[in-house]
Image (cartoon, rainbow over all chains, first blue to last red; front, top):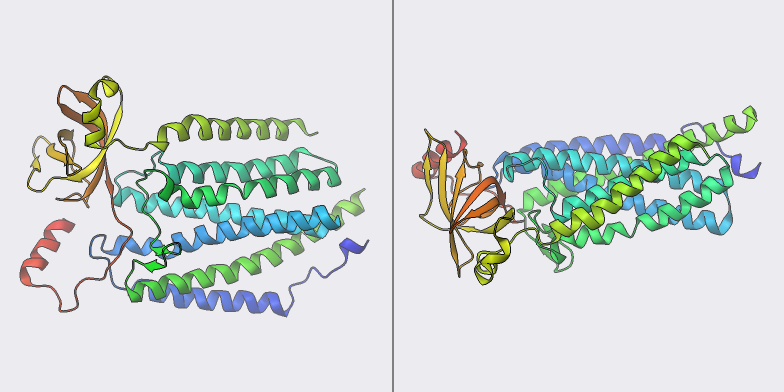
Length: 230
Length: 143
């Protein structure tokens, strides 16, 4: 079968991505721990360096899942469905890490682990949506129907992202607005801190690509096994 | 269809619907400003309210023995006295953004949950280093 072709072994690109990703992460962590403390929050601000990166990568992963979903609906190639699910899974993982890191940051700064304010509520909705995505996939046995339903869900899920991002601007929130204000083109952060954040962001993105390729290959193995078992 | 996953999926769907329409509805107006309260106090009577504003400079009174915290929340137009029990969060200070959850008892707001709202700007401490006064203040703050 055409869609089952392709190697499931880790090739040079995979290995390079992993090594470079870990290297950049190491540099990022070094920068994070040597960056100056914040005047207000002192060392608590260091969670930002991974919290923001994880959140951004979660958004990216869900958008990529949507792109692969559209490609699947267009070309009907199961490989696209596998990659769509892989990206959604990584996105969900990063979303959970974002929420965890956020809670750790919120308790000593805001005073509570959680509160139902717009950004957190929309983040909870986004996370619940992709949990639902995987329940949907598990619920359907027929591979083609499953892929089509999942594709629809993956496309729908991306609607959450701009709402989540803009929630701090549209509604009254306790979550702060973006420090990296891409809308107004302003940066509200000290130079050394900016560098630490960007390097960690780059590291998380490189590792995302590695995880995507890895999961794609694992999914291919699983698909082949499903075929043999029939 | 594998039933148990379908049931799980429907539960998630219900949860999202609840969050979106029920929860989000309440969180959309996450807090009320003092002037908004003053415009229509009767609307908030007996209800659980979140009051948001700044801590008025010089209005903070904290009794470490009884853990009684009293301060004034202001939005520059209207001042509202707040009473809260418990040690305030670390970032709590004059002119800090706060959101207090609680209810009104007469003119005083009885808060039971105190949240700090901080800005999105992060700055390193001044380069010349700290003066002895600043160091002393920093040490006191981290206690």
